[in-house]
Image (cartoon, rainbow, N blue to C red):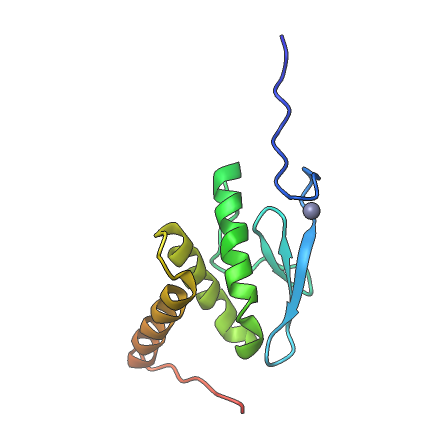
Length: 125
Ligand SMILES: [Zn+2]
């Protein structure tokens, strides 16, 4: 019996999860994107509400969403990142023509709903 070699998750060829990018939010929270699509804070905690990928396919999509998020994340506070990440994953899942625009549109919609629920956001310029 032969066992199939697992497909590499990363373009570097490594199959073990490893950090592939680091960014910092507007309020100074350090974030890491991992080769399996996981996003952790500088303290090593996974972002709240973002489940881990259950398959290589999901991991690939989560990495794509992670890059979408990391292109924008320095404009946002740490408190907004989990919601923005969820919107990035939704944009990638729905295969939008313009995933960045879709992510931001979803995020704006989420913000409106959240503000109606009575929460407030503090914007720092
Ligand atoms: Zn790699």
